[in-house]
Structure formats: structure tokens, C-alpha cells
Length: 344
Ligand code: MRU
Image (cartoon, rainbow, N blue to C red; front, side):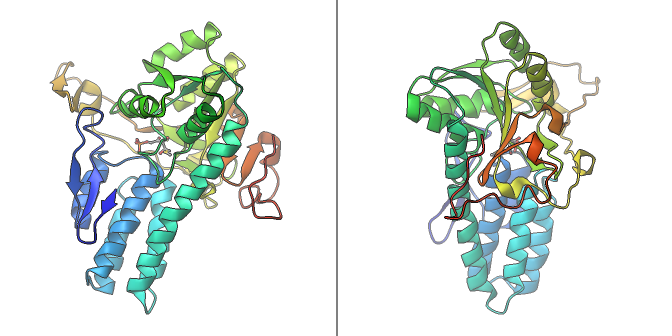
């Protein structure tokens, strides 16, 4: 995302890695289209794009009531990720104040800077779990394209690579738009991480062969009981990891934990168009390989039950299952000096 004082630009992730095209986004209708097409995606990045646009519109003189209406429309675009709702809710509070323009700008800036710091904390806590030379599997894209900072699961891999210089990453290609094969692989290349792209269904074979040491994924919403929603295919990885006794970690900011969501059944799962399963439409062109009359079923996310998770790596600490039962486990685990505490 870029803002030069007049124009807000968003990098079109559907065209990466082959084309770097910046989309101009000066109104909420355009942002809704950009988010719906996954031209910007990743829970934190979507939330930040919404808050930044609302701040820009406030600064450009849009009326308070109109801004509040627009904020509500942005909340519904991608229903699974709680970050969008959280960010927009914070913007709504700012927009309701007397000095709503200054408040909106300050809130959007704060949310952006916070995300950079949250990613840093997650990266440090998670990288400490990895050992030199390990082979890690990751799903979807959770890197700097998906956040304001170094990413969540991907930030951990970047940090581990910086510490040891010799980690290896299996990159699940990931439906619906091959976010792993296109975006994570691209980021691995930039970060100098040895990697190989695999079809999602290859993960089982690799685990059976002993070629996966750990799995790190991101999340779009974590329920209070530790169940979490993430990109479709995450649940099958977690089941496979359990069968093969491979540690399986979820990395996300504390803000991804939804205190209003007691368990997975409360998390809404986004459905997407069947054309994303029956063909592709990316920078390399458009093609369809299925009989046009055959229907397709295309949920964007699935739910992984807490019992399959080894640990939740939040910016405030690393939580194991035994801590989930404790009251308000998700709220704060900072040490006395305000620094995140490592619990593993
Ligand atoms: O549909 P997407 O590409 O927005 O889904 C992204 C994911 O599932 C990520 O794992 C999640 O948003 C966390 S990104 C830091």
C-alpha cells in the first residue's frame, strides 16, 4: 500500500509475481472490489487498507455520517477475518469523535505501526522454536504482502533464515488463487530462503517420508477455545501433522483472537465463486479446464480444532494447549517490562 498525499495505491496481488501493477483506490466501492477479487488479501492487510482509506477520505473532507456508513460496508467484505472488523470498529470510534479527522488519521497510523510491531514480536518468538537446518511447511501467504510488517508465519521463517541461514520451506501452492505458489514462493526468493512449491496434496507424502520438521500457518480468526479459521487446506495439514507427530503452530497477532467467539462454530466461513476451482485467471492468463455445466464447491477457509494445535504463537507469547483453559488466556501475556514472554 502506498499513499503519496493525494492518491492511495494498492499492489495488485492477483498479478504477482509476474507483474507489479499498482491499483488506484480513492473510494470504498473500488476498495470493496479490490478486496473481493483478492487483489489485496491477508487478514491484517485487508483491515489496514480499510482503515487507511477511511482516514484518507476523512482528510479529504468526506462528511462524518457518510464515513460511518462507508465503514459499515467495509466490515462485511470478507467475513471470516476478524482483523477487518476490529480495525474498522476502531475507525468507527475515531470517526464518532468531535475531532474525527485527526482521530481517524491518528488511529489508522497507530493500527499500521502496531501491525509492524506485532509481526516483529511474532517473528522473534516463533523463530526461537525452529532449529538450524529444519524443513518447514507453510500454507497460503502470511508474509509482508499480507501485513504491514514482516508477516506472521512467514515472518517467523524470515527471522529463522536470518538467524541460521539454512532453513528450507515447503510452500503449499494453496487455493483459490495459488497464494502460496505465487506469493509465498516470491517472498521466499526475495528473502533468500531455499524452498520448493508443492501441490497441497503432496504434503502427506512429505510427512510420511520424514521430510517435514514443523508446520507454521497463519489465521484469520482464532476462537477463545483455540479453534481457528485459516485458508482452505489448513485443517487437512493439521490432521496429517497429528498422525505423523509433527508440531503444528498457528502464528497470529493477539488481535486475531476474537473474544466474542467462544468456539469454531461461531466463525463465518466465506464462500467464493466456482470459477476459481474450475479454472484460473491470473497474470499468466485465463483458462478453464472443467465442463462448464459442472458445479463446483469453493469455501475459502476451513476450521482447525484446537486439539490439533501444538502452540499458538501470538505477539504476546507462545501459548500451549494447557493454557487455553485459563481465564482470559488470550488477553495479555506480556512480561513486567512490557516485552513479550516466551513460554516454550
Ligand atoms: O484469502 P486470503 O489470501 O486473504 O487468506 C489469507 C490467509 O488465510 C492467511 O493465512 C491469514 O489471513 C493470515 S495473513 C497474516
